[in-house]
Amino acid sequence: MSFFRDTLMIFRRQERLALRNPAWVIIGLTQPVLYLALMGPLLTHLPPVALGTGSGGNAYDFFVPGLLIQLGLFGSTFVGFTIIADWRAGVIERFRVTPVSRLAVMAGRVLRDVVTLVVQAAVLVLVGLAFGLRAPVGAVFVSFGFIVLVAIGLASVSYATGLLTKSEDAFAPMVNTIVVPLLLLSGIFLPMTLGPGWLQGIARVSPFRYIIDAMREAYAGQYFNTIVMEGIVVAVAMAAAFLWLGSRVFLRENA
Amino acid sequence: MAIIEARGLARTFRTRKRTVEAVSGVDLTVTEGEIVGFLGPNGAGKTTTLRMLTTLLRPTAGTATVAGADLLGDPVKVRRRIGYVPQAIGATMGGTDPACMVGEELADQAALYGIGKADGARRTELLISQLDLAGLEKRLVKTLSGGQRRRLEIALGLVHRPPLVFLDEPTTGLDPQSRSNLWEHIGKLRSELGTTVFLTTHYLEEADTLCDRVFIIDNGVIVAEGTPDELKRRISGDVVTLRVNCSASTATELLGRQPVVREISVADDALKLTVEHGDEALPALLRVLDEARITLHSINLSRPTLDDVFLTLTGRSLRDDSPAGAQPAAAAAPAPVTATAAKE
Image (tube, rainbow over all chains, first blue to last red; front, top):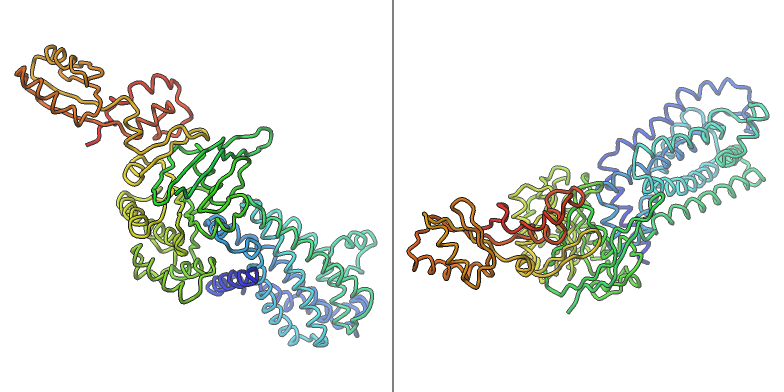
């Protein structure tokens, strides 16, 4: 089908450009590794109970899923920046006048972002192992599945937002305003259960909260309980909704 | 055969409170093999019309057939058959990625049209030589000169050998040398490849040099169309300026009797005559003066330019981008005798 062929074509182009200037891939990876190295040791001194249902309360089994989500969140929400530059160069318009699928213009980019994220996540998990991560292999794959879903949705909506705002000055504050609170409410660094009741209540609105909880359950060896199911439902629903939103923007007749 | 046939093409934009009619009811017919110019000042509706014809913007009214496909019914078919080179000045640039290599851009463009690798490589190679891009294949786009980058952008519009190519302000922002060089290439599109070229410009020389036919658009409406010569002829003829040694009044009287002379005026020693077909009238006028033994100091024939046409039609010069002139009637009248009208 031409949509898949077109998607692969765009993917290859974007991948080639990313590899030519890998600074962003490396910067994106440095941050979670820094968190792992500089913040992880703090968590090892928390009482195991505080870290939730984990097996023996291993701090890294708790922390790595959070960092994976953080990696996915930052890695994919800011990709919209790149499309603003492409739009300004006239590249988006040039593609829109060719018979290439307009949806593939988005899908190829999202695919590139997912591949980048999976590579970064693999590095993060390997570094985590060195620090003391002891999660089962199956759980690592489950968590990759979750962050891929997160990345697909967020990257799509980020590209759409970039294309709609057409300005870095509008895009950056907008994304920051949304992402930072969501990140804080997701219990990435510390378990939300440590917080007072009102904070835990608010945290229920963050979809990432459910996804992280599900990933932590998996890291503790629990695959089939309501927390994991909730996480899957939230992740799939979010990816589908954002993908739909993003494709609507790319499929518009006027842009 | 018509390769573009547009009827009543219109586009309105809605801003906060009011609707702006960027293009209101454009009728266009372009025949295969023509080089057609779309002329107008900034904001006249040139780019909006072009974006509609290239499927980037859906018209709010009207119909069009472009390269044999229905613009509204089958835009993908239109895209397959046209080439488009966006304008390189303004909010968006001409469509090349600064971080890509020249060769990559051409190969990717071929892939966008579903052209296979081998075939794509052949076409790329041909375009590289046709557009003087040899030796630049491995260069990053951002290191190219303005003229080189523009030639690459034109090459991208031609990779799939479209029968019709749209060039939005192809030479804007280029130095005079690159401009005339690009004109040569655009001329070759037709002579060597048989491509129909539809270009927008606000350079009169460009329309004059390149185009078989010109559409003049102003405030979203086509105000005139025709060959550059036809358009120029439409306004009050050519101007002959003569300087005679002394007997200016006799000369005025004699020349005033000639049927070809429509108007005559004297300023200092100079006689200004408005005549039809100045080039053909000149020998007869000279003979009249010679027979009366009036000696000539100098003679100058100036033909109206497209700028004069534009001025006459719209009441403002194409060269200043200010909104419609303060006194359009006054501006329109003296058009053929302005100093800038002198050509040749």
